[in-house]
Image (cartoon, rainbow, N blue to C red; front, side, top):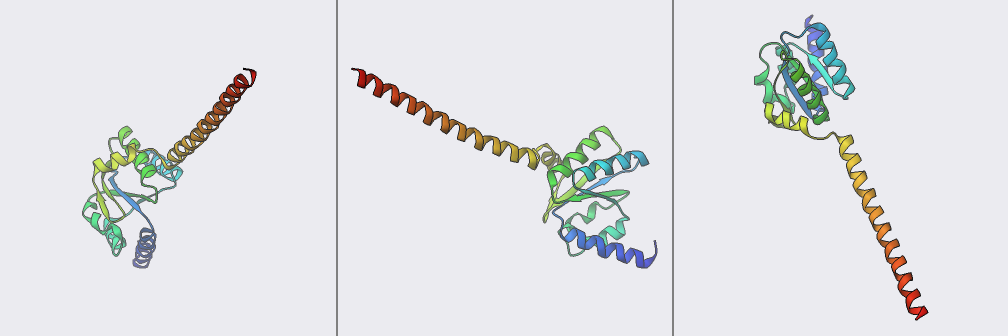
Length: 168
């Protein structure tokens, strides 16, 4: 890569990282081109991004971002997955690593907090935002139904009581 292209890459990647909430670092040594392509596709479907970059360029791009704390993980052939949705990115990477032993998750960062592999696995086990929204919506609508049924039951009970009193 030419010097100007490297500088441009670092500048662009740095500006992207400044607006990103979550970053994961993993070793990909031993993955075939088709496996990496499959991982890229899965990452893209989860509205995340995936990069394989030289560690020196990634370190430069990490400067003045929240991700400086994970520079020490940039050793060997590393890949970077990043997004604003830590749960979906973690799910894809952890699931892929289960099926492909050559992808080794090293750690990551969310905001300005470093995350261990175990913490990333915990993130992956959480329900996605879509699932949480659906559950909340279901809870709200079920409560509304319960209120309507309770009001209807009380009204019919009141009518029965009035009818029995009226007939007596």
